[in-house]
Length: 220
Image 1 (cartoon, one colour):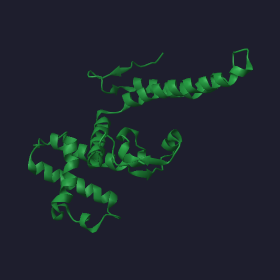
Image 2 (cartoon, helix red, strand yellow; image 1 turned 90 degrees about the vertical axis):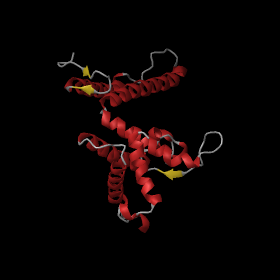
Image 3 (cartoon, rainbow, N blue to C red; image 1 turned 45 degrees about the vertical axis):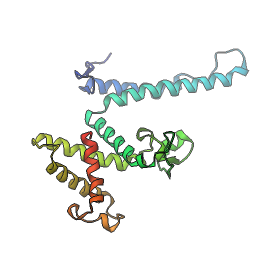
Image 4 (cartoon, one colour; image 1 turned 30 degrees about the horizontal axis):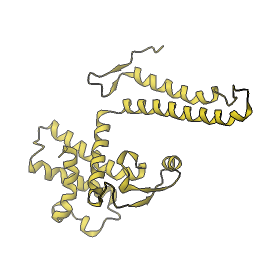
């Protein structure tokens, strides 16, 4: 039994208190030892079934532990983290929208990932980022959208705290300028000359790219 109560906030979105984290840590320790406690020895009397039994065991372990692990990971994420993921997903969909083909697929865009866990799971380090939903992308190909989303969500929360009109043109331009500054800090070394300019000197086309990030955070 846990020494502390497991509590979840009223709308069910995020866990609170140390009790839930204690439960998650205990689960992690249990998961680490479960594989070794459930040995490879087959309880069946026929050796020809041993291989099938061991494969079934591996499949059940992967499915059970992976599923429960994803539940704990989701519950332990903060509302802000989930908001960032939502905005990042919108940005990915905005990027691939012009590539949409008849039938619902997108013009392929094949990239190489350095996410070893993703590559092991998928048996390749090649990913079609246009035909892969944001949540299923490797972490390195989520990063830029996630970083932009993180900036935009922070700007919206700061704006709310100071009572700014988040739907006003003034807020849009101020927030878009901050999005551009943050993008330059991340990408300034390789950015084309026309994108290295201060926000107010950018072309309308380039400004729209920054505004899109703010709109995605606003849900527009």
